[in-house]
Length: 214
Image (cartoon, one colour):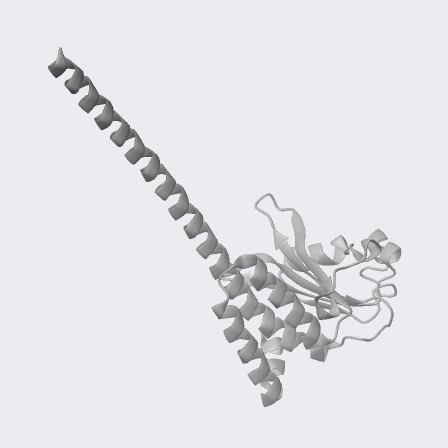
């Protein structure tokens, strides 16, 4: 979906839905810890579009994709056989930065030949990139394997708007954790240095006392 079309559709979203997304955005902005934030992001994305399950996917510095957050409706953990995701769909979204909706992945000519789509028996899938300042952090991937046509093009604009807000919150939480880690490391270094200074001072005082006694 092009940016102009997405913007047009977002403008047509009803006021209640927009207010709901803005409310969620404020909640996300207030959450500074990364793990709880991503849990919240995924739960809200699943509820927003009525998906069976979803994944928050993170793009690593080496270009690989990991999904540290994955769950079903209501925050329920995935069963082992559900804990898989189509890398073909993910790569398409992450590499192009374009959102994707599949009414029936198994019959879609773009993905019907993908091994992951056939193996997982994928039907309805939506995937949108998590982007901030033009950089892709990862993606939100939601699906419904049991029915076709669960998602349509009209479902994309709310999820895109939500993902844009989530990406900013995730980036801020990530930077906050990195800053806290640097502060903690620097504090530890200063404490170690102070202990060395105190030890040296104590040793010097003791050496001077012994010289005075003799």
